[in-house]
Amino acid sequence: VMDVTTLVRERGNKSENLIGLVDDTSLDVGESTVAKEIEEFDICVESQTTTTVRAEADPPADKPCFDEEEYVLTIVGVLTSPPTDPPTVTPSESPSDPPSPSPSDPPSPSPSDPP
Image (cartoon, rainbow, N blue to C red):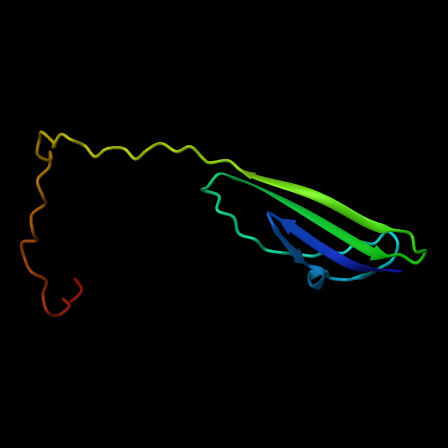
């Protein structure tokens, strides 16, 4: 059994200790664990963000146990067409069908008898 002792995330010029987010810090050989962090990125702005994560553990044989990974997230701006201009010409003809006429008789105040 070994204990995960360090989980550090570096992004930009900030370093954050994430060991408190690790699900299980006590692992047998071959086991893994998970740490989840939520970060919001504006996908409408082009950017490139590099994140480095370093994990360390104390194995039983006092051999060094660590790993470091680097992740690069690149957001490419989406090219969209500019909005179209409104029509500049007014319609040249009236509608082809006039509005339908109103009903000839107003509704009766009480229901009628069935036929």
